[in-house]
Amino acid sequence: MPVFTRFSGSPQPGDGVPEAEDEPAGEEREEGEREATAASGPGPEASRTSLGHRLTRLRTWRTRHPRTARALHLTTTALAAALVLGALLLPNTLPALKAVSFARIPAEAVIGAVVVLALPRRPRLVAAVLYGLGLTVLTTVNLLDMGFNEYLGRGFNAALDWDLLPDAQAYVEDTLGGGVATAAAVGAVVLVLLVAAVMVAATIRLATVLARHRVRATKGALIAGTVWVTCSALGLTLFGGPIASERGAGALRVHGQRTVESLRDEAAFVQQSKADTFGNTPPGQLLPDLRGKDVIFTFIESYGRSAVEDPIMAPGVGRTLDTSTKALEKAGFAARSGWLTSATYGGSSWLGHSTTMSGLWIDNQRRYRTVSAGDHLTLTKAFQKTGAWDTVGVMPGVQKGWPEEKWYGLDKLYDSRDLGYRGPKFSWSTMPDQYALEAFQRQVHGKKRDKPLMSFVILTSSHQPWAPLPKMVGWDELGDGSVFHAIQKAGNKASDVLTDTTKSREEYGRSIQYSLTSLTQWLERYGTDDTVLVFLGDHQPIARVSGNGASRDVPVSIVAKDPKVLDKVAGWNWTEGLKPGRDAPVWRMDSFRDRFLKAFGSTPHPSKG
Image 1 (spheres, one colour):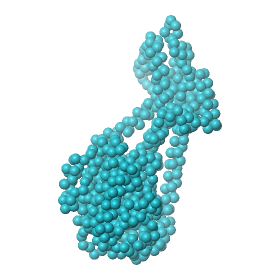
Image 2 (cartoon, rainbow, N blue to C red; image 1 turned 135 degrees about the horizontal axis):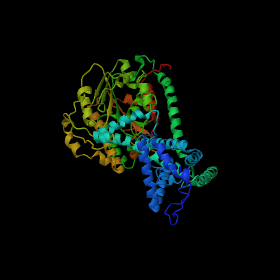
Image 3 (cartoon, rainbow, N blue to C red; image 1 turned 45 degrees about the vertical axis):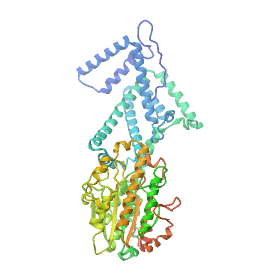
């Protein structure tokens, strides 16, 4: 609620008392003091007496120091107005956070001023408090939008995203330590409470001032409203944006619509998840053309299109892909690569994993919980269902019980506690990818078994904040991982990389090179004639690294020695080698499951929702 009024700057001559316009006589003179008393609520007689004494002293001080009192009055009123206007015009993305974004006339301020001027004292106080709390909600959701847009490439969803806040705290704890995580959580709560207190104080202040200067404020509100309507009707703009703004109401409306749509979407998705193209396919008709092959599905954390095409990251990543392609060709392997559009961006890797494996578009936590609690056929479970493969998961990022292993169809899960690692953590990543792959070879892939193996492997060394980073060591030197202590100690600090955008992009590129090198060297070293490797990214890195407006595409590659395997996907028109071309096909990630099943001979037998 802005102040549409002017103030005289000179005191009455001779008596040191401010002008009558600013200090009305009679009941209005005491209105601000009475509103302050009403806001504090009824209390003991002693408290009222003490408050009255303080107000008397305040009036005496104002009489003795009129110029200072006037300056303080104008300053606090101006700050309150700036705070309210700033909250109403605050953008919800960091790139839009510019001074020109605040050169607008917010309709909510005009309406707020009109309402305040029309109400008697007590209802006016209530309205001011509610208005301040509304501004607190608006500011909070705008700040959440900023964070979510920066890290996940989308706005905050009040219906779905509260569950992600504990994950965010856990990430901060793993990255910067438990003390920082606790301080950040407490600081966030204190910040919201502080914003609420300041906003309510500001709106009460402005409501009081408007009431004191009712005549001028009414004229000012009428003029501001007329200007707003005129600018809106004529479509007038300033600095590239409309002068007449409804930013605050629009932001809350968008969040409300987003919440309603999410709840409706959940009901529709429940039915969608029950329908499955291959839900009733008999085991003997699933994946007949891969029988006898050791198939490995590997996700590389944050391996996105930006790693392959961004001017800062692409040169190093491109060299690694080219070198690895040649090394694998020398070992007898061939590869084909394309693009998939991920269901997530910047984080929430499990949404990318589940989308790829289920054939359903799982872009939020509620969808993930719904589908993982059901029996929708995952690609990994299709291998288990045939009875022709042993199925295992290797997930060094999992540090506690993981009930989703049943939904994925894994006979056995190897998490961070099962791989024998005794080295240091590398920020969020519990162990280097090279070690995780060697442990996979030692404990799983290299053992003799009656059936071929289907493996689901998640590599984590390229997880943000990309500091410190591991380095390749001799495969025979890995041992229990203790060799990485010196490397971890000599690496960058996470806090240094997090605060430097250029360094974040550089270190991200290096982390992708490390993960790719670890995986391709492992395949070169341990792959057999029957090995089929499918590897891809789960999502793009955060916007600060991939860039604002970056696509959600991730690279995907299939590598095998047996030419018959790649012949099955020849119709996909993927690029030869490990680096997909710019013009390679781009599919949605949820289409991969059905394409893969059909390519390798599976027969659709739908189940209905």
